[in-house]
Amino acid sequence: MLLYLNYPSWIHPEIFPGVKFLGLIRWYGLMYCFAFLTAYFVLKKVAKEGALDTKNYKLKEDDLFSFITTGIIFLLVGARIFSTLIYDTSGVYWKKPWLIFWPFDSQGHFTGLAGMSYHGGFVGGLIGMIVWCKRHKQPVGKWIDAMVCAIPLGYTFGRIGNFLNGELYGRITTMPWGIVFPQAEKFSSNLLWVQEFAAKIGMNITADKLVNLPRHPSQLYEAFFEGIVLWLIIWSCRKHKKFDGMLACIYTAGYGFFRFIIEYFREPDADIGYRIAKDASAPIYKNTSLLNFSTGQILCFIMIVCSVGIGIFLFIRQKKRKIIPNN
Image (cartoon, rainbow, N blue to C red; front, side):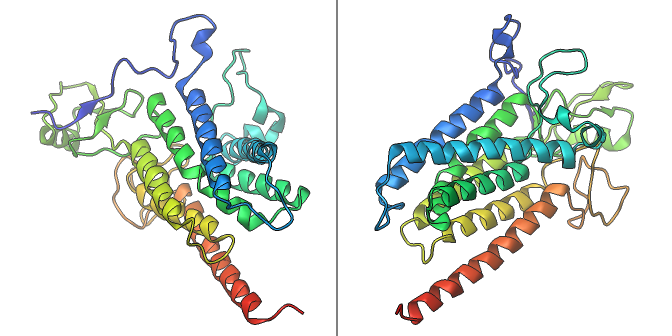
């Protein structure tokens, strides 16, 4: 009995593989479109509930479109900058920064802006929303709270896009839902641990061959927990918040928490490995210690600490405003 799944052979990064011009259209890009549209319609619903109402402001749909568009532009810029300057280890983007937004390879072939960082998108999107609110003289906390009611549900599509690309897969696993991803690292069938691992999952292997072992579908873990579950938590809290900015803090801490845990199942980038490790020689394809931390975990820890600190500050400030009367 096989205790693993093969990645579906009919799934390709391109929606129309082999078709001229249409072959440039990829599932990942389409998922981004679905993500932004979903976020927009959820934000629109939240706005209709009165989440953005103030005494001196009458909400216009053009403002919603302008707000989310500004956030998206800054998000894409931030995601690309982080991906090239923090996650890329070649150093080429530091030497030639104009290549960060250059969508062609050295041969002149169109590649698009391959490589986006969530944490960079988070910082960029946050800056974009703050800039918009300041420019339009709107309360930052109120608008960002409305936006985070929509972000996780849209984010779900992004991780589904990663799955359809067959990228950002997890570490090897003997769980029955483990998936053999075509692009994952292969191991020699002559290794004793590979033979034992294959025996556990009922995989037949041949001597002197490279074996592709099943991995955690960490993209789907993230889509579910950082997307759907986190969205349900925020959605249920949206009408019970104690201060403006509370939902933003819940989102930031919640995402940081879920992602930190899931990183133990997701394989770190091969060229980066662990940023902090109990054992520097520990393999990245399996989890050997909870004290080995990836780049994503470090950034998520910072997210959690900052969100808790800012949340406490905003709560105390709100309490003071209620105690001290306005003269």
